[in-house]
Image (tube, rainbow, N blue to C red; front, top):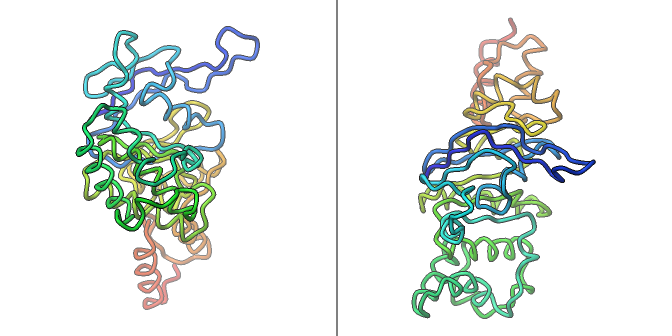
Length: 288
């Protein structure tokens, strides 16, 4: 499912004395089955952008096309779009409300008017997709689960709608390192095994560098950079710091080693690449 954004602008409190422009004439495309990471400091516009992608917010101007459907068209039935584009917001477990895991996940598919057998199949499939065994967890109260497990239930509820695009806004917020790693691994598996287009907002630059195929950097409502992780992080480290963003630790390490005179490649991105490059330099006694 392709997504095309054309000249998108959004103004909060438009026409009021305290109006502010959250998105400023941005345009870009997301290809089918891409894995897109959106990064930016607080107030950069990334969450506002995400809320436009399934019609939760209406733009002040501009257009959004999802598979040739203009979702900014007031005549369009957004229910069909929201079946195809699922959104998981920060702390999605706060939206859990049913007495069992199975009932909570079934809520969305049931509201689609599906028959009982199809709903049960979707619940079971989505639970298995997020690593929750159906027979073990279906009768449990979601409120008795760990934070990471609650997050998985919430994600399963969106997956049960069979979306073609899954949007996740800071999906690991508030989790401990173990829970964060589990959720990121889950997202990677969903993308790889279920061919879902992923749009992920996160403050973890190291995870973005490992997971995303395309990175969009937001700054004051505009797109500062867009490209592969290697293009964005390796070529723009200084500018990213200027606008208040971190860079992956491997790139930070490479920069410090080069400043100390070591002949380290400028395009390393992953831990394995950094390890290989450091060993190469050590074997060659690698100062310039």
